Amino acid sequence: RGDLPADVLADLNRTITRNMLPGDVLADLNNTVTRDRLAQDVLNDLNASVTLGRLSPEVLAALGVLPSISTQPFALYDGATNTARFEVSGRGHALSYQWLKDGQPINGATAPVLEIANALLDDNATYAVRITNSLGEANSQTLTLQDAIGAPGHPLAEANATDVPRAGLVLWMDALDLNADGHADNVLLGDRISSWTDKITDKNATQAEWTKQPVKTANGVSFDGNDFLKITDLNVTAQHIFIVAKRHPASSNYHGLLAGRNDINRVMISNATNAFYSSTGNYFQNGTGGSVRVSSGPNSLTDNIAFFATLTVGANGADKGVFGDLFFGKQSNYYLDGEIHEVLFYDRLLQDAERDAVEQYLAVKWGVTLYQDAKPLAEPENGLVAYYKFEP
Image (cartoon, rainbow, N blue to C red; front, side, top):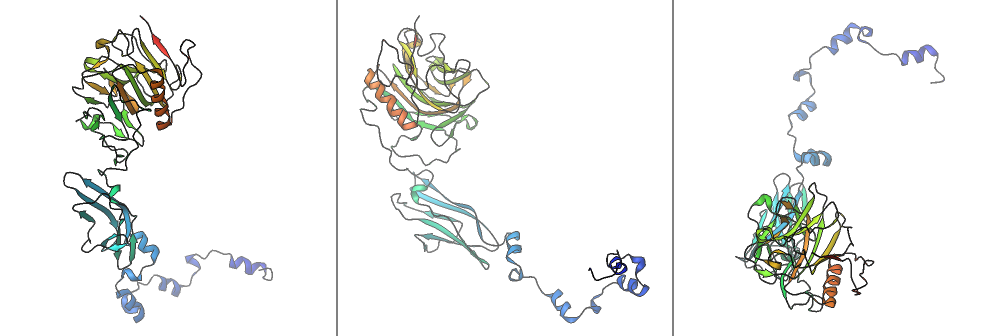
């Protein structure tokens, strides 16, 4: 450009407008292009069908015609019929399905759904599906029958009688074993929980109304401030209660954890004091002998942090610890916004060493940090976490 004179450069940089074009050029620009004016090769190309094979991979992907897995396979197990059902969702044009067992095709299994009769839950075979069409294939993730929703999970390690004394144990609710069969639950996170079985009495805490059912979390049963479960006609007496829970931030002043029939034997948290509440004989720990020990220490319950509390029955408590019914996540009009992980009832007061063993077991199991500083001088004992005593 440096060798060109200025007038040439100016001409090169000029914008060409219509009034600068000669008449024959303008006339040609304004002509209508008809088919008879096109060359034969252009006509042939216009008349050809646009097949998928002529499209680029980028266009095929944008059109969504390449085979792909839109929902990875999942399995459902029905214990009543001992059948398993695998399902997958695919995306693409004219898809074909082929289910695989240990990488080998299953004869006749060519639909999005695979049903297995007489399912062997201890079978370690892996299942997957291959989706194909004329453009390619896609393979799903693998899963086993043990992964099926509703199938018993892996066996749970049961606490020994030293960690959790069995003498006097009248209720044991474990959020990792909702049906109390000794196996981990295969329940999807976020699923509604309509029933939770006590490992001691085999009675169920239930909720028939879907909108009031709590949901499953990774380590607990989550209540949203309107949910609750109820065991009807439990009819046990609790002198010592252990509860592992987690409090979420709530708009109400109180979190109702547990309550008995006619709203007695209440176990409730006050948000104002960050402590367990006890104002009248309707509260489990109210009166002589009643106490609360909290893993996080006095008045230091923290939102979204798991804790455990150990409560003993007070002499003023209505019916002195008798639970005809038992509510979880509700006390009168106050509901829990949080999670319950584990609850144990004893019909006797545990010895200090027994109580400490249960607390240590729960702390390790649920990853709860113990508060070690508050220890009444009159009652020296290992593992004391916090202590409240209610006197008349």
